[in-house]
Length: 148
Image (tube, rainbow, N blue to C red):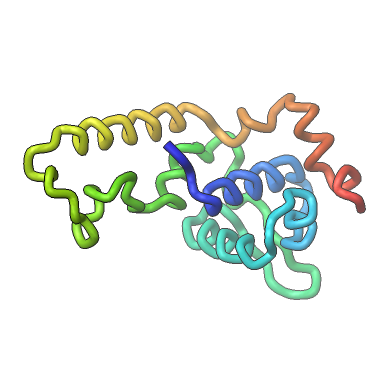
């Protein structure tokens, strides 16, 4: 299974916030440190804010922080919400499906089951588990390591 760029950015963004829990972090410092486009990042910030995973504050002293404790943010939840209903294969997308085997194919069910197992395995992982005692990650995600 391949995750989208948006999901990858979402996890990096959340890890950055979790690594800097004592302050609001800015879009520009996340973009610089995590090597992501500010435009893509803005879309992900908006989505995570709407989901109640990220708290955003506008203005001169604005920024963002986690809206919930890192221990309560499950990576499976993030993946499900950010990935949305993207079809894994053509036959999952009813509108664009041109596969003549759909009516008799058992692969669709197997792939659907596999996707659910993938998300379920990520449900066991919290954001806190990704950053807690991960000193190498902290060196990368702390502001001093990002060129500031």
